[in-house]
Length: 202
Image (tube, rainbow, N blue to C red; front, side, top):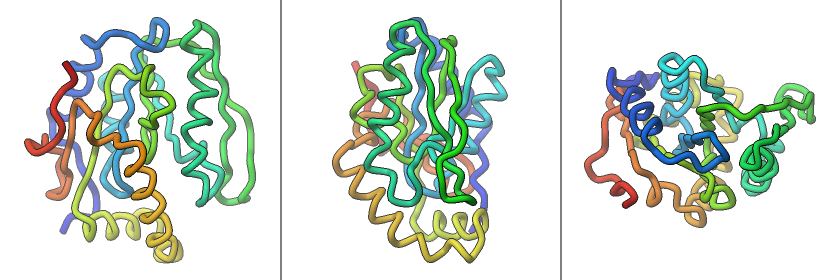
């Protein structure tokens, strides 16, 4: 099985095309949230979107978590970042230093045409009214676990079970997959539209 999810040639282009025609809901900005399961390929897909739209700001919400137990608070963190942007002002967020196990420097985000958030929980309910496009990325569990180990090393494999339980609890409440306009399955190593995924919003 593949250890890395590689976006299909049309996956990022489909996201950009959908985003560009979606109504701006974050002030003048269009917010795209690429949510899904750990190891599914969200970061890879978001990077590909950034290549197609170099003017976009792409933020990884993993860096906004308060460590391994921070997922339940992510929605509030995103809300604090985005509400000023919705009003045409700059927003801020603080980076979690995973090595030092402590909060690090603060970052400022100015209003832009396209803002992309990627990471587990990035499409939290708290910010649903600000999102122009929600994307869900998934893959079979054994494939995702192998990618987790390949990416982060065997030393972090012990966190897999706890993190998987936390993200499952989060998604049961926030139901981002059901709200997503696009759903990609990367089990085969390339992001393909999942025909069994959610329907686009009217």
